[in-house]
Image (cartoon, rainbow, N blue to C red; front, side, top):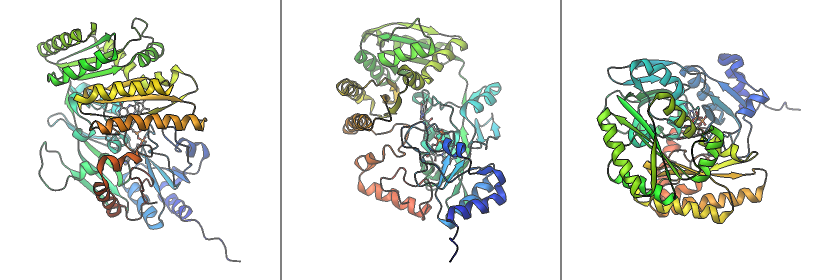
Length: 467
Ligand SMILES: Cc1cc2nc3c(=O)[nH]c(=O)nc-3n(C[C@H](O)[C@H](O)[C@H](O)COP(=O)(O)OP(=O)(O)OC[C@H]3O[C@@H](n4cnc5c(N)ncnc54)[C@H](O)[C@@H]3O)c2cc1C
């Protein structure tokens, strides 16, 4: 009898042991931890998890996987919400969370170079004494590599931009193990195809980010936060639209509906607040500029039924407020114990925000689901956290139906299925309606060029991604 030949993945694991040792593991608990992110997809176990520490290790491992046609799913902190890290075709889960060096900080040029496993919280703790900060702030403990890969944003994006604007350059290991650098340190460059922006948002489907050069911002002279309660959701949304259309450079302007406020009040012990539609705001600049912006927004809010501002000026009070906002997702889940969340992430042009958001609210009411709404509304972006029993297949189907309805309306209003969370598994069906067949064909051609064997995070982003 002929012996059964080893599987390609076993050959990769055996060869990778030579340079990773015990850092490539078949341990069940670790494979479970890498079987999905913070989403409701059915978990899939990778064959092995590799904890890489250097670019060279990533390169050697990818070259092996390329040669043996073994799938690789990059993994940062696993906080993504659309099934991104679920290794649907098994293979290797490539964990970058141990690449945590902050390699350079230039206060003069206001930039830095970091490895992908650094979190924004770690980077900001490192920068604090230099009067600088990194402004992109998702409400999770995620890695900067994951943030690059999902083109993440957060509450500051309305003023400081998203990862698209704040990544200056990258080091990327391609599917076959070649290492390239993209972008540069200058504020401007007209030097050919913009590969940085191709990889930012590519969700681990084109290569692995191993170094990131980031733009930094100066800590403003004055920062003041405020909350403003509204009797109606419409009033709150219309205040946001008027604020943005007036060109007031707010640093943050976030909306929480009454359900989300009820959840946050309970979770973050904000007992002095009311469970009504509420805006969380922040103003940055010189003391005079902050006062001027705050006055202008107050006047707009008053016209739309905003009932006075409650201010937070000291760092501690401001941090408490924004921690509560960042914890909104966990508050939503904790509000109804045992449930998980399907999170929509539509984004629309600011003039269409009221239609999109109030339409979503009506859809939620008609569906019978509880789904708190929270949003980076200054960007036209908001989330509904549809609370589900993930073991109930019929309920899950109805929840996805609600998700589709909310996305379809946003697309009809000139918006997008994802403002910041990305496509992963969950939003693939919307790519063709959003971009059209020809643009999708270009994306497929790029994928085939950079990853001819389809090993990089297979099954994600493109509707019919090759295995
Ligand atoms: C409570 C909560 C709040 C959130 N709030 C926000 C928010 O405000 N804004 C926002 O944008 N998102 C938000 N998210 C979503 C999530 O945190 C982001 O998508 C984040 O960028 C994911 O980073 P991660 O390190 O967890 O990546 P992972 O989930 O590990 O990976 C995400 C994707 O990136 C790929 N990837 C990871 N590292 C690399 C790398 N080095 N090279 C190539 N590909 C890589 C993975 O393959 C995967 O496709 C939130 C999530 C939670 C749970």
